[in-house]
Image (tube, rainbow, N blue to C red):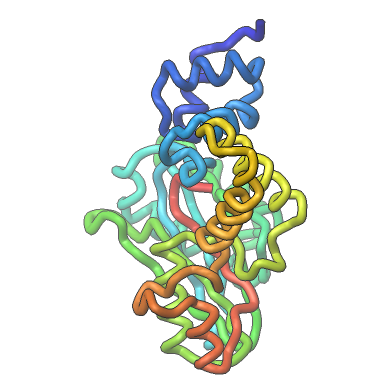
Length: 274
C-alpha cells in the first residue's frame, strides 16, 4: 500500500473540497496518485469535485494594461497575505510589471524584463522589501481586432482578484463587455467545442459511464445516459454553449452570432485558482 501523507490529503482536499476521510480513502484506492484520486471522488459522487480542481490557497491581485482597443495584457501577481495584496507597494509593483509585460507582448512570465532587469531579480527585491514570497503566476497578451477587458473585486477592501481578456473578431465594445463579465461569472474552460481534445471527451465519456454504473443505472440505458452527460459537460465547459448570463434563453454563441462577431480566445485569471 502506498504511503499516504498528511500533505497528500491536504492537497487533495484543496483540489476537490471533499472531506478528509474521503480524500484519504481515495488516495489509498489510487495508490497515492492524486489525479487518479480526484477521478475516484468524481465517480463516487463527491459534490463540487469537477468544479474545484486546481484550487490553490494564495493571495494577490489581477491587473491589466490595455493599449487601444486591440491589445491588452492581463497579469496575476501573487503574495502570501491580503495585508500585502492591498498595500501601495504591492499594487505599484503590479503596475510596473504589467507595463513591462505589455511592452514585451508577454504571455509567459519568463518573457518579462523590468527596466532592463530580469523579472526574478525584481521579484526578489520585492520579497525582501515586503517580507513575503512574491511571484508572477501567469500573464496573457492578446493582440487582435478587438480585445475586451474586465476586472472584478471579489472583496471591496482588496484590489481586483478576478480578470478577463476576451478577443473578438470585430469591434463591439458592448458585446465584449457582456461576454467578459459572463466569463468571469461562469468560468468556461474552452471557447468552442472544437478546442476540446478527443482525449478529454473520451475521458468524460468514460467517467460518465462509470458514474452511471455506480448509480446502478440499467445496462440498456448506459449509452444514452453517457451521451447526455457528455452534452452536459459541453454546456458547462464551452463558452459558446453556455446559457448567456444576461438572457438564459440564449447561448453565448447565439448572442455572438446576432452581433456578427465571434470569440477568438479568452483568458480568465482568478487569484488562487488554476
